[in-house]
Image (cartoon, rainbow, N blue to C red; front, side, top):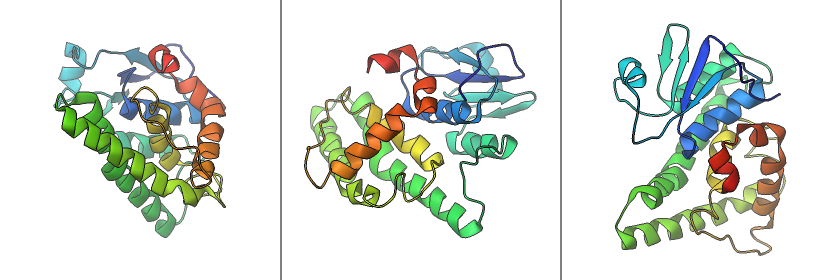
Length: 208
């Protein structure tokens, strides 16, 4: 397990501060994929990325002649290309639920992180912080009986939520230490101690 840093046919152009890039790096680490990871400043995207990605965005994944620039597509592609360990359920209903969980995380959590990181409107930022904290507290009970997000197994859903939780302190968000939030706090500890999560961290993320 872990990202192997040597020359390969796969290159991942990654923003070392971005939670969207981080989620894909976790998948790569879970799969033990041999990949060249190029850390790039998100505001100075190089010409080579602009050539293969019409939106000039990060992250961007290149596998031979294939260029992918949407993280959910990247994660599903990697799960199919490298099937062990599986990060998506086999059955259609369970797969659909996993995709819907990711959709909810993006609507309720990822969008708020994006506002906090990029907005200069203080009121908007404080509102986003409060909404993110409330969303996470409301999720806490689901970890009471299951070790991962609505699952006995670590999945792509955890790959999406973990990077957000890792950034809370850096975003000046503190979860209350209460009986209600204890399942979520325990979940965070499990995720952060996971080998793939530690392998996936950029130097900047480690400082977070």
